Structures are given as C-alpha cells and as structure tokens.
Image (tube, rainbow, N blue to C red; front, side, top):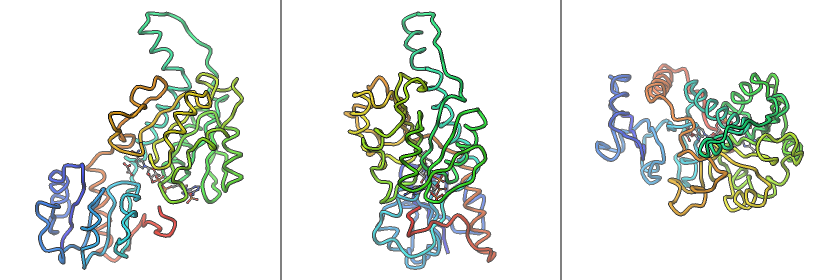
Length: 318
Ligand code: NDP
Ligand code: OXD
C-alpha cells in the first residue's frame, strides 16, 4: 500500500525524498511521475490536487491536506468519503502569527508613511497611539486566529475574536453569531481575517462588512480609517468592494496575502495600489521537514491503531 504525493505548485521530488526517509517501510509515489497502480494508494497527500485523481483511488483510507486549509479538496463534488486530516503544526502557526503581527505593527506604527518620507529624505516623526489604544478584531478563533490573538494581546493591543462558537482566550474578547460580528466590527480599528473558506465565509469581506468597522477616527493608527489584513482565503473577500472601500475612505489601507485568483493576475489594481501591501500567499509558508514529520507521525499513529487527529468536519467545511 502506498502514499501518493499529489501537490501542484510544489516540488514533489523533494517531498517524496523526505517521506522516503521518514517512512522507509512505505511505498512513496509522486503524481504524475510515479503514480502506478491506483488501487494500491492508501494515503493521499494533496495540495490543489486534480479532483479526478482524488476520486479515482478505490482503496484510499486517509487524505492529508498539505495545508491548514482544506477548501482546495472540499470543492471536489466527488470527494471520497474517507477522513481528511489537515495541518496543525506549531511551525505553521508561529509563522502565521509572525505575519499577522508584522502587518498589524506596520499599520500601527505608520510604516508606509515613513517609507514615503525616507524616499523624499524627510526627517519628521508622527504621533502614534499606544498599542493599548488600538483595537484589533480577528475573524476566526481557531488554531491560527487564537494564536495571533493571544500574541497581539501580549503586545498590548485590545484584541477581540469572532468564531462560530464562543471562546475563552485569555485577554481576548469573544464574539460569535451575526450580532456578535456587527458588535466586533464596530469596535475594530484593524480587522484580521483568518477564517477558512466555506460557503458561509465566501464573500464575507464585502462593502457592507467593511462599512461596519469603527468610524472613531481618533483611534485609528493609519490615516483615520480602519485597516484590513487578510491571510485566510481570497474567496472570502470581494475585491471590487475592497477597492471601493479604499478609494472612498472607508478603509485606510490593507495587507493581503490571499486573492480571489492566484497568482494575482498582472492586470489586478492591487499590484499598484498605494495603500495595499501584498504578499504572494506565503504568510505561513512553513518548514517542509516539520510538515513532513507531522504527516509521517499521523500515518504511524493511524497504523498503530491510535486513530487520527485534526480531522476535518466535512459538514462544517473546515
Ligand atoms: P481552524 O479550523 O482551526 O479555525 C477556523 C476558525 O474559523 C474557527 O474559530 C471557527 O469557529 C471559525 N469559523 C469557521 N466558519 C465560521 C463562520 N461561518 N462564522 C464564524 N466563525 C467561523 O482553522 P485554522 O485557524 O487552522 O486556519 C484558518 C484558515 O487560515 C485556513 O482554513 C486557511 O484558509 C487559512 N490559512 C492561510 C494560510 C496562508 O498562508 N495565507 C496558511 C494557513 C492557513 P469555531 O471555533 O467556532 O469552530
Ligand atoms: C494553508 C495555506 O492552508 O498555506 O496551509 O494556505
């Protein structure tokens, strides 16, 4: 029985080499180079994998997502009814929190303005509110949202989080449900999205939502309007609405790691927008060895009869 690595956009050869070292007693294959007999595939390690391939593995037992998100697999209408395990790993979590904290600090400490002043050789400081005066709201209080929330709270920010179920994270105000969302937005200067992409979160970051953010300009760190930071999924954002909000003053600025279409098309107005910072979906790019060890350990535990952890709830969609 074999583990098939089918990861588009990644160097499958180096992943296969790592798994061969970690699971020397397993048959490690790569798609399409060494796929072989499909009936021998027991485990699939997938990232944006061809849906037809996923649906044509008759003896598949477990799907491993080579990412924390599983929208890339769940959009397959013919997904086999086997458990799907996602990545939950301290290395990935840490990197995401680093990215979120970096973006929050860049906006809070007016970095864009200072870069403009540096380019113009202008030696001039600005008043900046203390972190304790800045209210951060995080959409999603799962593994990633809760970690970023905790760390931002330690830095002194007033942090709140929104999730489906109520949470109790030290130093973080919890909101849930539709009413909870409006209440959190109304007290938010910097909005961070770390929601998974599901039918319920598709297009959730639209003009209506952005219009509900705090309008208490005195507290806004960046240009007297709120800021958006999105590292969840591009499918959760309505990009025309974000541009309208930026250009109409509803949003001061944004940091985007994810987009409706990736790679970001050359013609996208985000590339040259003066108040957009973008990164190429790399917010939580992790150590490949750490992710491989995680998957190999899950396989070993499963084969030892210990069951699986971090299994996706297919009904909830994450
Ligand atoms: P989790 O499953 O641990 O957390 C998801 C959170 O979202 C939970 O708090 C959940 O609520 C909440 N949620 C889901 N649906 C809703 C909804 N309809 N309304 C309110 N809250 C909702 O996921 P992770 O934290 O591990 O990852 C989050 C996402 O981050 C991934 O799905 C992926 O899309 C993205 N990601 C992006 C990366 C990048 O590089 N840009 C890297 C890794 C992940 P509850 O707690 O009540 O269940
Ligand atoms: C993930 C990602 O889901 O990198 O892990 O987007």
